[in-house]
Image (cartoon, rainbow, N blue to C red; front, side, top):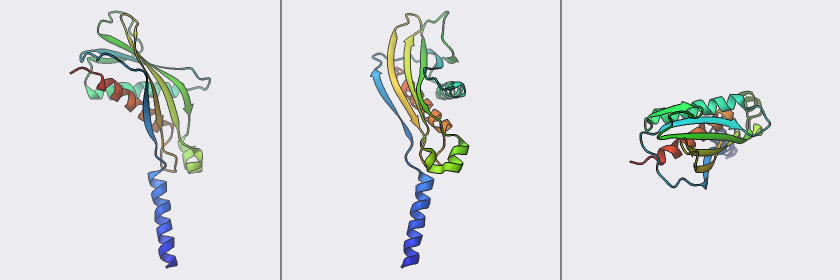
Length: 175
């Protein structure tokens, strides 16, 4: 009976370590878009930061992940990094502003496991018409890794935030 209980306890511990505390992502509409995005639109995406911490590498990764996911979806005419400033008809400028981050490196995750905590990236997404400059929508996006030994780190949080951004934009394309 004692062996059986030890076996059950071991299975529970291993499953908890592999599955991890749920990571994930969320999106909150602060000013929801009221119009659809034309299917042949061109998108420009840029990442910025309003926090004191150095997040240059994370901004570059966020830009790369968002543009990759949008190009993969093949819904938009073109996806570029930066902001459109010339010949911007049928173009959206999308600004991802990093407002908060909790970094967890691979080394921290390896040595501290669950004690390293969950990596988190909060981004304010501002969608603007490139011609008029009007703000069409504002969203708060959060990407999180899990919180156990095999749950990932900052890269996972960035990937989950980028996925939310891409899915939001694809979901607003008119058919």
